[in-house]
Amino acid sequence: MFFCAISGEVPTDPVVAQPSGHVYERRLIEKYIAENGADPITGGKLELSDIITVKANPSSAPPRPPNFTSVPAILNALQNEWDALVLETFTLRQQYNATRQELSHALYQQDAATRVVARLLKERDNAREALANVQSSMGIAPVDDVEMDAEPANPVPEDTAAIVEATLNDLSATRKRRKMVEGYATVDTVRSFEPKQSIPSLHASSPAGINSIVVSSESPDVFITGGNDKTVQVYDASTQKVLHTLKGHTKKVHHVAWREGGDGIPLIISASADKTSRVWGYDESSSAYAPKQTFKTHKGEVVGLGIHPSKRLVALASADKTFSLHDLSTFQTVYHSDQFDTPFHSLAFHPDGHFLGLGKSNGAVVIIDIRTGSAAAELAADGEAFSVEAVTFSENGWQMAAPGSAEGETVALWDLRKQKATMGLDLGGGFKVKSLSFDYSAAWIGVGGIGGLKLFAPNKTKEELWSTDGDVTDIAFGHLGKSVWAAGGREVRIWGA
Image 1 (cartoon, one colour):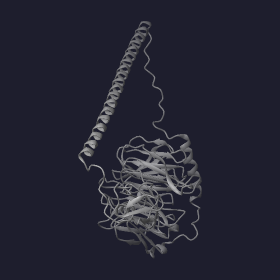
Image 2 (cartoon, rainbow, N blue to C red):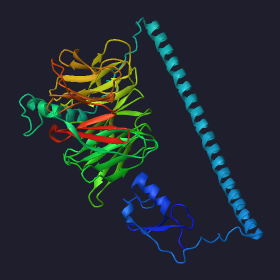
Image 3 (cartoon, one colour):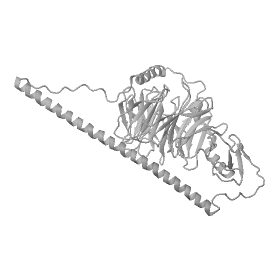
Image 4 (cartoon, rainbow, N blue to C red):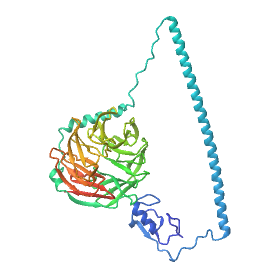
C-alpha cells in the first residue's frame, strides 16, 4: 500500500516522482510543481514530465484506516496523547526553572557591578577632594582634567579603504579615454526597439509580484528575479525554464544582485524586508546555488543593495537609517555606519567605486565617501519631502539621476561636479518612478514605474527615444545594450532591435 509523501494518506491517483522515487497524490504534486518547480521532499528540480502514473491493481476506493475503529483503540490513542502532554509539561517546567535561575544570576551580577561602579566613583571623588586640599595648602592652582583625543567615530577599516582607493585609481584613470565595446547599441538602435518576448507566471501567485531583476553579464538569456513570494529565481529565457529557486527569506525580496566574473565563484545576493541579506554561491559539483552567508546587520528592512566595482564588497542600505559594507571573500561585515537623520530607501555605487548614493525619505540623496564612511554631499530636490526610491550613476562619472518630485512624475539629472540639478525629465501625469538605470554607454537612461517604461537621452535635448505602457517595478539592459528588460506583476517583458 502506498502513502502520499505530502498528505500521508493513501492516494486515490498515485504517481511517482522519477528523480526521487517518492509517491504522491497527483493533484497535490501538480499544484506544488506549478508553484515551486521542485520536489517537496528533496528540494531538487521537478517538472510535470518527471512524474509517472502508478497503475494500482485493483483500482478501488482506499480502505478505512485501521486506527480508531473501536473504543479500545480510541482510549489507547487518548492515553498516548495524555502521556505526551504530561512529558511536555514536565520538560517545560524544567526549562522554566532553569530560566529563572539564569535570570536571578544575571540580576545578581548586575547589582554587584552597579555597587562596584558606585564605590569606584566615590573613591575617585574622595581622591580628587584630597588632592584639591593638598594643592590648596601648598598654594598650587588646581589643574583641569585632560581629555584624551578620541579616535574618529566608527572609521572604515584600512584594508577596506585600500580596496576602494585601488579600484578608484584603476577605473578613473581609464574612464575618459575608454573606447565603447564593438557592436554596442546606438541611439538609433534604441529608437527601433520592439517586443521580443514575454515571460508570464514567474514566482508564486500569492503573494504575486516581482520587485527586482538582473540580467546575467555572461549568459545573455539568463536572469534572476526577487519577488513578494520570499524567493529568488534564476530563469533561462531561451529555454523558458526555472534553473534555480533560492529560498530562505521570511518576507518579500526587495532587491537582487549577481556577482559574476572576477576571482571568486558566482554569487547571488538578495535584500529582504525580513531585515536580512542572503548570499548564495554556485557549487559546480551539484550545479546549483548553495547558501553561503546571511547578513543580519540591520534592525530594519534592507531596502538597498549594490555590488562594488571591485566585486569584492557589497553594500546594504536599511530603513533603520544605517548602511553597511560586507566582504564577499570572507563574508564578514567590515563596516556598519552610525544612524543618519532619516531612513534610506535606495542605494547605488558610483562607477569608480569611491562614492555611494543613498536615497533618503526627505527627498535627498546623500553621497557617502566610503573610504572614510562620511557624507561628502547631500543633494536635495526642491519642494516637499518624499522617499527617493531609486538612484543611479552614469558611466561618464559625473551624472546622477533620482526622482525629482514627490509625485514621481519627473527625474532630476544632477551634475556631481557642480552639486546641482542641471536638467529634468518630464514623465507626464500619472507616472511614478520605481526604477532608474543608465546604459553602459551613458547615451540613454531608462525610467520604469507606474505608467510604463521610457528611454531618454540624458543631454540638453532630453529626447524621449522610446516608450511603452504597463506598470514596471524594475528594469535592466541586456547584452551590448541591444535590449531592455522590465519586470512588472509576475511577468518579465523584453524589447530589442
